Amino acid sequence: MSFIDNAKRGKAAPLFIRSAGIITMDPTLGDFVTGDISVRDGKIEAVGERLTPAPDAEIIDGRAMIAMPGLIDAHRHLWEGVIRNSLPTDDLFEYFQHVNEGFGGHYRPEDAYLGTLVGALGAIDAGITTLFDWSHIQTNRKYTSAVLAALRESGLRTVFAYGPAGRRDQGATWPGDLLALKAEEFPSDDALVTLALGGLSPEHVPAEFAAYMFDLARDADVVNTVHAGLNGMGKGGEILEFARQGRLGPKVNLVHCNTLSADEWKAIADTGTTVTTTPMTEMQMGQGVPPVQKARDVGVTISLGVDVETSEPSDLWTQMRLIYGLQRMNTFELQFAGKEHPPRIDCNDLLNYVTTAGAAATAMEGKIGSLAPGTQADILLLNARHINVMPVNDMRSAVALGMDARNVDTVMVAGRILKQGGQLLGVDLDALGRELYASRDYVFAQYKFELPSPAHRL
Ligand SMILES: [Zn+2]
Image (cartoon, rainbow, N blue to C red):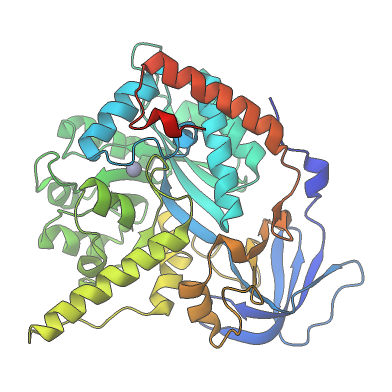
């Protein structure tokens, strides 16, 4: 199966974006009201005012556009694309039952491929250029191959977090073959799809097993991304114990962290461990209060993720606004109660969460998350003349608060254009839709899942 015509996407040719508003997210470069970006070999060559294009560069008109680094979704389970919006009211434990034990047990490799592909394309459409995919559908290596095929075909920059099986009796080899998988499938760190471990927390599995996974990821020199600190799950204090054992660090990414203690937060800050919050699932499914303030109190910058499309939209704009409302609401509540309150977050914080902090969570700082010479050309051109944002009175607040996927005109990953003029390039939506609906019918029938309102099914 293939649904993408790569000829229509073109190659990473030399490009020159002329006269765009530019938010670089690079503290030295700052922003430009009118600037140029030169791209060569998939990387940014120069950013500045009144640059001269190379003779071989294709010129892209950036007028009426805001250029910024592509957004980074630091936590998603892409394979669930087939079962989008099917679990709107599940709490976390109902979700586990339906997804991990239900649908996941009935997926075939082709369902994992289709779910991952449609999720990845939806992410690109919404301006995401890098996504950390916690893939717990690794029932056996056929599933691994299917998911990797989808990720590579999508053109999205992804970190594939090798996770548990959908069904455990079908020859699963996770996590023990992580090093072998790295040698076989990930010979280069420069590839668009790189490897991580979807590990488990000592809060949720025996500490020896969790320690084994932390060691394995360290030996493979990959990020270990771990769900931690969720309401109603496991025993507390285990993350602190792992910190004492020297197991935390910049290549450990903890997701959610809603219930972690003050000591655990201090240990996270001291060790440079990264934290990703997924505001909508945490609020809606009961994991706990998104830890934006707890993180800020110890100087940790959170990254954001969509988490699951079984009940969430596929974009980061929604997540940004939820965290904006939440943190500011809480500070106002303290203020009007006459209590001391922390500073309120602003649009700069939001933009950091979805760019530079995402780069740290994926261990790609300096490579993605900003537009500066030498970084990857993962660039968005956002339409500033769309009816929903003009006139743009402030670029940063227009992006952080006013825009959404409608404004995503152009998406470039490693200098390759995947979306232009508001359209995904080279995607056969009809063919993908046909296969996706067939896959949907199959997994729902196999699992015998009753939708809350079958009459509303398309
Ligand atoms: Zn998750």
